[in-house]
Length: 208
Image (tube, rainbow, N blue to C red):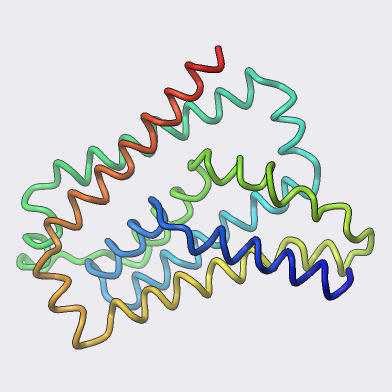
């Protein structure tokens, strides 16, 4: 893979990672609820899910799913319903994250990692991103090293970006102020997840 192709891939991965959405909301929630460690665990679990999508795109499975509308739409629908379920849980959490913190209940590393990988694997927008933008780089290299770079670049970029987010949010001067607004952030993240799920379902409905 040439340097120019890799830089183009890097730019696409940076744009994808930095775009705001449910992934950012989930990292924020777990950073507030469990501190720096939980935020970073969520970040790298999410990055692992990104790596899985990069791998299935490399193997041609993503395109195969796209060519089988029933399979593709079924996966997208399951993902949308899962996102809405997570959003509903955030909206209806008793007292929100703020009350949990007051009661001494914090996000564990396993919970943060679980939600991190789930929010990437069950987000249909990420699959569409890889189909639309990432697949063009798959043929850039036929060597094993080139294929490894194609998979690792989005994984590492995503993990580093959300790690930076978790480190910034967990700063001693910022974290207490954000935790004061934890209940509001809880509701906002829940609304984002539900709206994304509804949008996916609406898009699927329009395509029927």
